[in-house]
Amino acid sequence: MKRQTIRTIIFLATISLVGIIATQYFWVKNAYNLEEKQFNERVHIALSNVSHQLLNINKDESQLINPVKQISSNYFIAIINDTVHPYLLETLLKNEFTTRNLNIDFEYVIYDCFTDSVVFGDYISLDSEDKNQLQSKSFNIVWDRDGHYFGVYFPSKRSYIINEMGIWIFSSSIILVIIIFFAYTINVILKQKRLSEIKNDFINNITHEFKTPISTISLSSEVLLQPNIANDPERLKNYAQIIKDENNRLKNQVDKVLQLATLEIDKLKLENELIDLHEIINETVKSFDLIIERQQGKITTMLGAKKSQIVGDRVHISNILFNLIDNAIKYSPEHPKIEISTDNYFSGIEITVKDKGIGISKENQKHVFEKFYRVPTGNVHNVKGFGLGLNYVKTIVMAYNGKIKVSSKENEGTTFTVKLPFNT
Image (cartoon, rainbow, N blue to C red; front, top):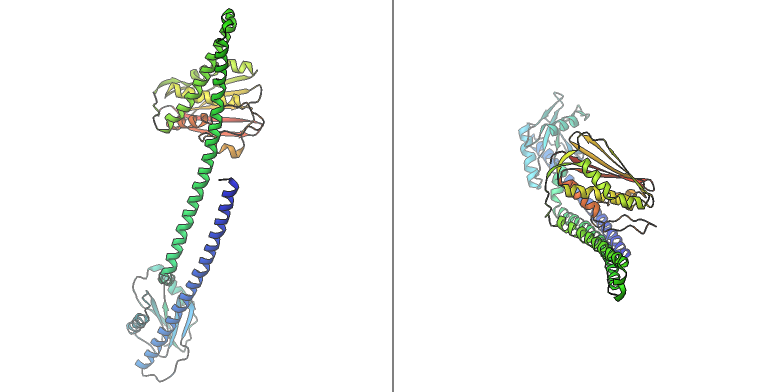
């Protein structure tokens, strides 16, 4: 599937989901407002009935017009014409709320104009925080000093209304699951697309890397099969050397692929022993002498670590240094200048490999340690490899509980810093 097609599908699917979310939000909000309106109406009716029942109990023939007033979203007050006992009020309120299917915790308060005092009733599961809110709301009310009032506070009104919206909560949960599944699916699609691209690049690259030495060996073999080749020992020797070099090159390429396979299936075996990193650095640098001389470059070592011995696998640690130096040479277009330095930190040794090559962009720095990833080299077409080296380096470093980081600026160079503890 083409990248543009995937982007179009993602865009259209995202637009559709945004539309569904906006529609769901609109209906849930309307449903909540409707539930709240119905709740307020039922509370108004219940409190009005309680006010009239208290009039009847007190044999008061006066009429109360709109006795209930809503102070805030969850606080209501009602007018009564005389004092009322808290337990009587509580009983009437509970009966009215039960009749109107208002199964919700509440707290009530009574204002008595004769004593100018506020009496707080006691009710189920009202914690101190809620009670403080009730007292604060009550004390802020300007009570009519010629009247009697009672107030009702619902601390869990919002939760109650949400619980009443069962079908809407269920549908919103389903949409949330769909969104999560959609995001996961898109993530998988993009990963698979990227893996497919990496796989194709790897296949093309490995085909080219294998074809070149194979073609060279084939041509050299044809020359060696010529009847008159035996009469020219020097030429015979040259072509035999070419076959040997190309065979070693092919072997190295196969070893790199097998090296990756070993890491993939967790068959990495580390033969730990006491090794001297300075000694390994010098040996590795020496192995690049011919390459550096051919390219008229220079490798400078500044081995400043006072303690250079660690417990590790000589082969794998050597491979770490080999890969870092090899990359530094590859990505230096001409006359490579490489600096290798060491220093101690509190529990280990720090190795820095610095070059003055083409550098790595910030975007590419995020991916340099991924399998098969190769930094685009622009006009530099002679860079060979499978994109396995740095992934291998990081795997070995992590196996020793170490750390590796890269810092780079385009056209200014790259620095790799490896930290390895003395003991793992």
